[in-house]
Length: 211
Image (cartoon, rainbow, N blue to C red; front, top):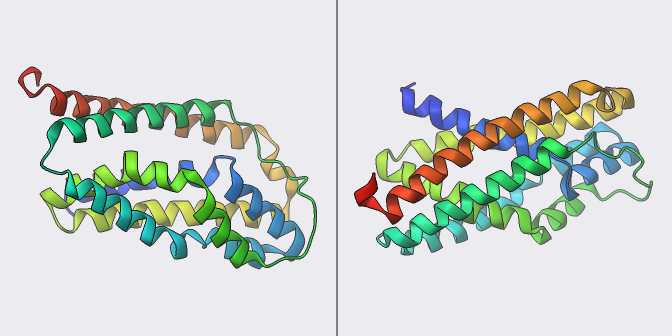
């Protein structure tokens, strides 16, 4: 695999792991459904982004592609993406272990996961401000690169949530120790690095003479 493919896969993997492990509506639902219906129910929720994200990605990439010749707009999007990643880094750094005391109830896990993901603003914000610009930029360089990025992203996004479901199913204590917090903080540091790279790209697009 070429070097830029590895870079794209690593970027997707870090972002996917962060999205997968950071506390939020979908992770809470993974835990709830695991407690109610077992690991299989939690796994169905974990896989729900594979069903919901394609139209979200297509919409965001189409909007960005229509503006691909307007460098100041793309620069502003990159700066917005940098700010969004810094916000994610802050929230990830400050996050503790997820809440394992979700109330029990009837499980329709996959349908619940699909609805939760479609109605959450986070996928739209991420793909418009961060993921979409990365896909547009990598497509211009190599048509295979966006698919490598997406592979890294979804392997870790779904895989990390599936891992949480397995841990909850086997041992609640595995998510309440210090190791989970260490992982979140390491991901927060990686997000700061990606935010700095987006800030650099945004500045270059807004002020090409300064690059």
